[in-house]
Image 1 (cartoon, rainbow, N blue to C red):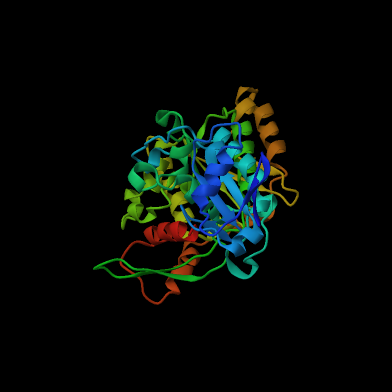
Image 2 (image 1 turned 90 degrees about the horizontal axis):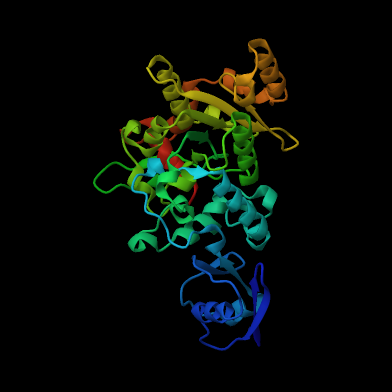
Length: 377
């Protein structure tokens, strides 16, 4: 009996299966058959399963075959250490590398959550929940004295090049399910969270369009919570005062906020995103003005961006000409999403948390930060 090992980019390998064969045996065998050096984490998967280090390959698993995932494609040879979460921006070039990896691997992975659990994933529907389960956590496991690290730290070559210029505010919470977060010696926190339906490819399209409109180079770092947080220790960044969180600190380092909307305009309904928008508006009265741009994709998957003032080439045009160019550029933006934004009520954004019945004295925004973290689990 043979075990089939699918190695994306290499092909299918076969080795004899025997009782006691382990995942480490399979990986060692596969590495003798590939020409390039693998420096990142490696993972064997079989259907919904992620097989652990030195786990015994059962006969049933051998009949199904396994996939060997090579995270070297998105990892630097050595992980950086970036002490402050707020300084872990991810560049457009790094996001593009991540999305290329997703396009190669998505159909080898499966949905692990909800009614569609067990169904094969596709590139077009691959979201942040999928990315966290199949990429972020496996690729970052074991680094920094076994504490794990953020995806940004695995991908970065120079930690100083990752300091964010733009803060990305987006909600990937779609429907609601209750979670109870137990805190020793303190009140429990109850939050409603679940997973996103915003595809990573559409998110990247918005950031790419934003960079083009703003004339930003591909090396420009954007702060995105999922990639900046250490997903193995997300509780470390939970603070009762939202101004003490990495979210707030990262925003203060940036020149602007990019609000990325999904097809339902979800960020307008989520209190953390409202908090981010309020903080952005509060800065309007301070000495330092923070820009606010809005990005979304239309029904055809085309990304559009509304900018705070003129952007890029428009700033180099004669006044009225630049304004006309901006108007033409923004005309295709999905108006239905703007209507939601114009009618948003902060009290309505709070309501989803008030339904819980009891919660800690922690601020609403801090609880929503916890919701962001738990939703990726």
